[in-house]
Image (cartoon, rainbow, N blue to C red; front, top):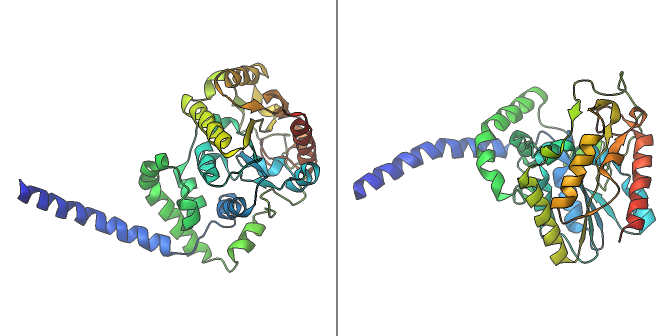
Length: 311
């Protein structure tokens, strides 16, 4: 029996060593996704960790940085406003894990999930693109992500090595790449933008919303982060992510049903109503979630008003 275990251990190591060597080689290469929205994850985490309480933290998908003007929120409420939103494909738990150790007394956490985030639609190759070889982000990854991160590594490695082969290592520093992606210091998108959607919405990204799109797993995650924040002396609010009204199939009834389920099952206060996020097409920029400059002003003003009226 002892001889069997020795042989098995040698065999297992023989299988693992090539993967370990490949992993080390890929991770030793320069980060190659810094110019994308995913590449903003490290900078935002650094700002979160270095900003003292009290502060406002916004969590959402890629629509979040297009929707909220951080400087306006800060000027109105007298608290720095950090927008962690990078992309919905990272999943809510990715952002919740970043809050651990970074919340303090008087902080306000605002969660604005896009519809796909209620479905827990995580793309682990995208998670790798956000983390790359940045130790600070990798250390904050939820443990539940690890199995799928391992199985998706080969796809990410192929994309990364292909990008380096085609484009070469970026001549820009990480901070320069972050700025090139359109982010301001606090994590929001700062460049001026008008609607460029020919039909007023992305016809390839329409949605039917029902109460069933939210998974039990996401509801548990929302309640868990609210409980954790409470222990830190922070408040958590759930609010709406913006969505182009033309891209919403079957009207607003499904949105209201989703809100009713969330209110019944989540122990979190609300800012506004979920239906408030269904906005006119004139406010959108290049997707059904990304607001243009005018839309961001409208959404930011509504958020400030909701915060001022919140308990």
